[in-house]
Length: 95
Image (cartoon, rainbow, N blue to C red):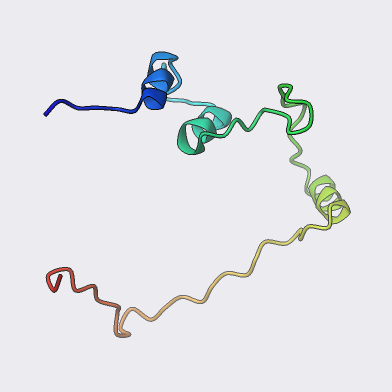
C-alpha cells in the first residue's frame, strides 16, 4: 500500500513549510508547523507582525507584567516525589 498524505499536508510540503534548510528554525515557523497557526498574523487587521525588541531587564519585565495584570513571579515548584513510594503501573499486557 503506498504512503498517502492529505491535500493540505501535501501543499504545506510543496510550499517548503515543512522543510528545514538548517538546524535552526524560527519559533513562528515551529508554531505554524506544529499547530497550524500563524503567530505573526495580527488578529485585528490580518497584517504581519514583526519583533521590535526583546526585553530582558528584570525591572522592566516585572513592570510590564504588573501593568497587564499578570503574575511577575514564577509558579512555585512542586515537591519532589519519593522514588521509593509505590509507583503507578500501566497494565499494557492486560489489554
